[in-house]
Length: 200
Image 1 (tube, helix red, strand yellow):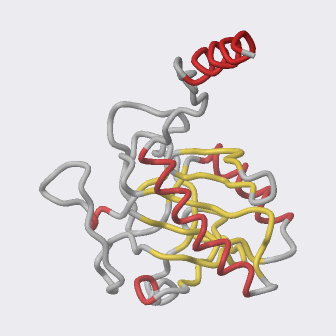
Image 2: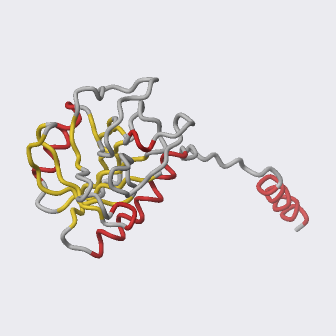
């Protein structure tokens, strides 16, 4: 009987006496991904309430990322992943005395970027070629139509990331010509309204 007790005690000490280190293979999320995940929850909830919104694709713009880096994200809501990304300009009225820190406004003639969720609407041809009208869905961007805030391309916006800040817009989300062509295919093939969300 004592032998069985000693064997049991041996295995107990071996198992519990040396705790096994559990390794977490998932690295911590970057601040950019943490922000995106937080905004994603809000957009998903909004889309769920309205059948007219696209349930497969949404656009996100993180204005806290500097303009020389990719901060326009095409997000696959079904696969739950970013499927494309590119550079996007902010309004020159959003610039402050501290480079990289932005301010935002919904006021006409402010030349600022307006935060909030938008519906990507119909296309038209304007001074920058094909562009998409944007309708603001929040108090922070309710004047989008009045301000003629649209999604458009511009030749001065580079297609590749760089260490320098890129050209500014008059408040519109302005992308490179190459990236615009990718967005154009997605928007034109969508039978429902795509949501574009600009946050900071």
